[in-house]
Length: 375
Image (cartoon, rainbow, N blue to C red; front, top):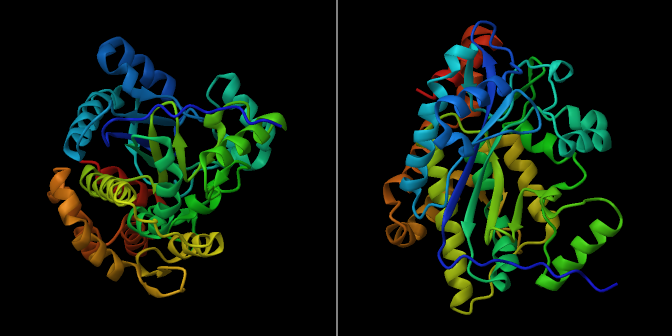
């Protein structure tokens, strides 16, 4: 079978786009609230200029804030901040708060309502119980790539940094009213969907096209965007989309992780342009790193290379940050990138949530603490 061609609309610059998912929680109970439609209506009525940057998701308890095409981390964060201000100015009228972690501590999947639309109904029809379980929220970062031949080498090499990004952003330790023992339960849940999880590591664009053709021919997907990999090409946007991260609770940590992703992708892009063969690891090592980061977060010992060298993820991050400093200067995000050091020093969201629960033994207090971090 001849594969259908997939055009990659290259981006002439390493532009940025960020998507930030929030759950809606009831102001009184802290439980999830199926109120997104009311919030969307208010945004459209009061702030139509921002309506296109507030998106629906699978469930009616979720809103997603998205940027336009940006060139720096600072620009992307300013764009998100403006939309966030608009939405937060309306949440009181709906009786909800914005909750930015990767999972909700005690939300019940059985009480959540599906967003209207054929795409969402078809997903649940196919995935059934696992699809209904997806009470998860994340952050997605797009970085522009100039030519399709770069995309897959960069994607495969970027997987070496998967555990670093997940450990820094991990914010989903609790599920169904109990601590799961994982820093990121979201990462473990999302990979249960049939087209989600780690990407395949293709050598050529033709192999990717053949894969997509097989997926469509066998009815696994109807559209390319139904491939929900943790890192994936977005050919129509000319980007690589990094979907590794848990939901983030505040703008400061968001800016740090966006800067890190931007620098990592641009660094790999430049190395490819210079003729370097970008380093990759075997899929089984990548898979193990994902599990270690999901389980242990910032305490994970990660595999660094094909020789199976290992190191504490935070120690490795310190060296990565030093190495990326020249790239950060070029991308005007030195201050934001240094924010990664603050996460390492002060702890990630999953650690803060556990500390609140240890003090209060109250899952609602955990919700309040996450909501409060957005201030």
